[in-house]
Length: 352
Image 1: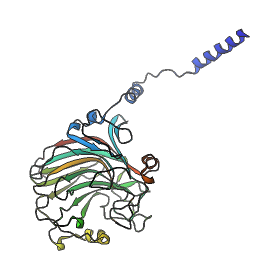
Image 2 (image 1 turned 90 degrees about the vertical axis):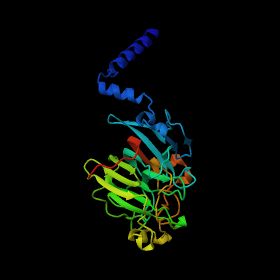
Image 3 (image 1 turned 180 degrees about the vertical axis):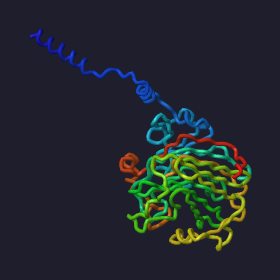
Image 4 (image 1 turned 45 degrees about the horizontal axis):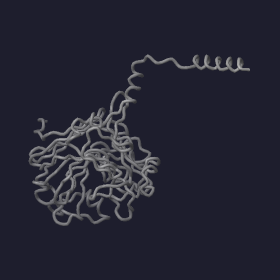
């Protein structure tokens, strides 16, 4: 009996050894395994990480980001021989005192005024936007991937760079918004939106569940693009580029307003903001002398607030009572991957 068992075990071991795959000698495979087993931090990819702080979608604040990461919010992914810093945040979580929208977003520690300026360059791709929301609401299905934020006065934003994609579309839109530095009551503030590729923010669906035509010149999820925000001597110079798309440039004066009278309010604003009665004007010197700083990451614009209260910003998306795991499982989140991000001083633009 003992001999029979021994023989059976011996045969099993022989067959097990025979069926075991040979160790790979492919250097690419070995590199992939090594990469997977090596912990990397976002600070290894964004070398100026000591110049940033962060707020995560679960409310975590962190000032020291060197060798810091957090699963499901801020970490490194490796794809096609490239490392990316991932910013991920749900539709509903814990956010800042000045917003009802969640974010996993860097905030620049150093502050500046438009007259002294600054520069932010980034290369990224958006991997996911919320799949729920009200198509009539301008902010639905969108994420802000870079901005300048004021740190005094009304704390408004001279620029927010958006990516937005309607459900069922392959291509989404990249656009940037200028928020007026409102003269007087800030409850009358509004954003003027300018298209880069695809539509501007004012293009919405005719009903809550129907969408406009897909933009022909849009950017798909997973498609890489770059932006530069260069503020020099009070003028904001913007450059957007993406392979296969025309490079687009804009200029905006941050020291002198274009919207100081009711007659200056663009038709886009009159139409988009009519339902919520926002028709403010801007102070004459815009953001002159006001402290600013850059922000970068995934600032989710899709929330669970009722569209009946605000057809511009309240998107009525699914939030599962704020359960982050359920939101991630059901498409109620945004995810943005950055390959590069650099801060610098503002500089004179190149001659056109």
